[in-house]
Amino acid sequence: MEPWTTNSDEHLCKALASLKDFQKATVDHLFDLFTKQNRRRLLVADEVGLGKTIVAKGLIAKLIEKHNSITPYRVIYICSNQVLARSNVKKLQIYKNSNAEEGIDRITLLGRESSEISDPS
Image 1 (cartoon, rainbow, N blue to C red):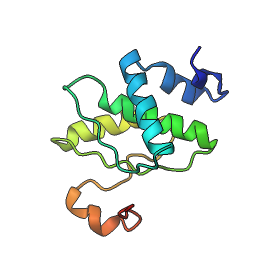
Image 2: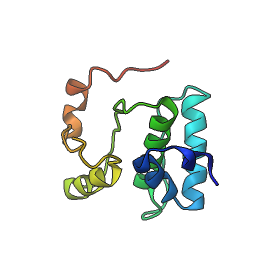
Image 3: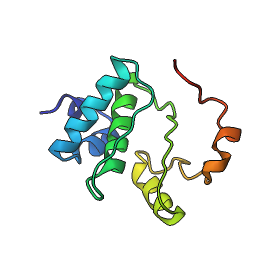
């Protein structure tokens, strides 16, 4: 049994249990980079259809589980078109009643609207 399946939150368990083995390995690696090495900017790149969005969801779920809170995480998601982006935003949702679709829909607005994003160095 994976350590993350012991959490009582069914939404987190479902998000994490649905990962394939290679996606779990990626989530674990990203989680270590984020939590142990304090890396705040991570890039996941692979072939189309291997589950980058699902890996991002897994990382968010694992961070929520670790901190035992539902503090929002800012995810900057860049893709080829808005139809695909809207579809994938729904895939990122762990809690279906969240307002994840409310956000910046143009990269040109990112700098103006995201004053919380800063250079960690």
